[in-house]
Every structure is written in C-alpha cells, then in structure tokens.
Image 1 (cartoon, rainbow, N blue to C red):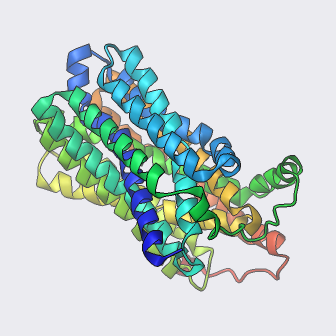
Image 2 (tube, rainbow, N blue to C red):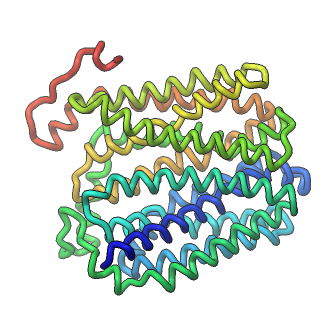
Image 3 (spheres, rainbow, N blue to C red):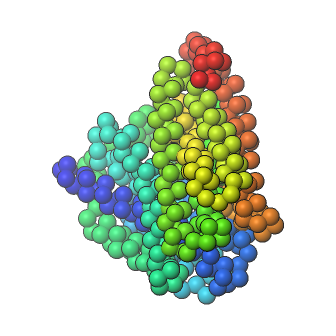
Length: 428
C-alpha cells in the first residue's frame, strides 16, 4: 500500500468521524428552537441528547465484534449511511416521538464507528504512529462537536432548525459514498495485522468465557471504569446544555450560542489530551500518580464549575467556566491508561470497549438527560450548579482504586511490590 493511499484512508475516516460528532451535537445547538416550537420540557430535550450516547455505550462492543467478522469497511459505510439517514429523518420529524426515534437510530449508526474506524486507520500505518493517530481521533471528536454546534446554530438561525439536520445528513451520505468507492477491504487486507497476543485460533465463545472475567478482575480496574464514567457526566451535561445556557442567560441568538458552546466543547476536548500528556509526564517514574492526576482534575473541575455558576454573567464567569471545562474531562487520559495497565494486553481492545460502555452509561447519556430533568425543577442554572457534585463520587472511585492499585498490579504482573511514593510526592 502506498503512503499516499494510507493518508487518504486516514483523511476519509477522519471526515466520517467529524460527520459522526456533527450529527450528534447539532441537536444541542437547536434546543432553544425545539423547545419553543414543540413546547418541550428540558427533561425531554435532555432525553433526545442522551439517547445517542446510551445507544453508543450499549452497542459498541457487539457491533465491533460484528464488524470484525463482516468486514470493517462495509460496516463503516453501513453505519455512516444509517446515522446520516437518521439525521435526515430528524429534519422532517413532526413530533417529539418521531425525533426520539430518529436520534435513537443516529446512536445505533454511530455505536461502533469510533472503535472500528480507528482499527481501520491503525491497520494501514506502522505501529510507531499508533499513539499519534489515536490522539488525532480523540481530537477529532472535539472538532466535530465544535463544527456541529457552530454550523448547526448558524444554519438554524438562517434557515430554520430542520435545515441544520438536513445539511448534516447530506454531508454524511456524501462522505459515506466517497468512502465506499475509495476504501476497499481488498486494499486494506494486505496491511492488516492480528492484534498482539492473539493467534486467531481460539474459538470465539471459549475466548470470551476466558477473557471477560479478566475485564473486572481487580478493584482498581473497576474503580477506573466507574470513576472515568462518572466524571464524564459533568462533561456530557456541559456539552448538551451550554448552548441553551448562553441563549437563556446571555441572551445570545442561536448562532452565537452555538459557536460559543462549540468553543467550550473544544476546550473540553483539549483538556482530554492535556490530561493524558500531564499524566504520562507526572507518572513516568511512579505509575500510581495517574490516580492523583485523575483526582486533581476531578476535584479541580468541581471547585471551578461550582464557582463559575455562582458568579454573575460576564467575562470573569466565562473564564472560570472555561478552566472548569478544561479539567472536567481531563480524567479521560489517565483513566484509559489505568485500564490499559490493569488488563492483559491480549484484551486491550475489549477493555477499552468496556471503558466506553462505562463512560456512556454512567456519564454521557445520563449527563444530558438528568440535567434536563433537574432544570425542569430548579431551572437550568440551578441544575448546572448541582451537576459538578458528581465529581465527588468520581473522586471517591479514583481514591478506592489508588488504594488497591499496588496490590492489583503485583497480582497481574507477578512482580515484586511497586515502590510507593510518599504522600507529598503524590500530592505534587
């Protein structure tokens, strides 16, 4: 395979990733219009946003397995076509129920794209580029969220909210068609390699029976799943509701509110990457410090966001809110690293699928829906003042995991006890 073709595969896969998140987040930009047109409660608006990550969390693992058997390229094209058609269906929805069904199918289409898409990209590049390419895909989700909210808000203000969905759906269909023509299973087959530690000879059912218990074999790894999932509750709530917050409390029109919220979504994405980099540097000699980084991000977001939503509207509030947004998903990097450390290399992909499940079911899906329900009772500002408290539970999970980490690592590796740094070193 030529180097040029490998980068074409990356570009098209990245384009579909942008389409994925644009179709997912365009809804948040048009919340104010839907609320006015259909007289929806905030709880119903939150459910329209939360159903997508819920489906992603529930279906990522089984659809990823299906894609490996049926063909990754074919699966990606079908998935992109499904979420694009479902987004077009949202454009013509005449009621909350029809919109909910459309969003449900958006989630089904997007369920396996992240795991299968990155698998296609990694299969055509050398192993030495895997970390860089994986990081680019993480950033792609943030960029797609920004584009979805910014472009969606602008289109909705200029032409109506239906056109915002329609444009996203057509874009996805065009990209899916180009992908189907340019990327083929035959051209990828020569470059694909079996995952490390897997021979491909184990019967699938037997392999699952042996491997699945190892996904939950220690207190530390379960704590990493739970802590990472709970902390993303805060990020999910912010991404879903900041467009409405700016519309209601800053009197921003739909387009400006979407652009502003999109910038905050970008800050959240940057925080994911920065948190991972900081974790790698701080824990280079003492891996246990990853837990301290995660707890620091979690508690830092709690303090900053609780402060931000009690300040009067204005530049100071926006600055503190941006700092809180930067930290609120900073646990994603150290959380993923802890899961990788605490599970055997042979089941790394399955472990990350489990982490995605926890992040979706505990964080992204309920974050939007629960915040909407709270907003109906306490107002949106009151709800956003309560949301950061979830970080207390996330910090508790990380603290439990840290206490068991040394013992669990020794059991996994069979090595001598890991040197425990002093508390002053951990806090630093």
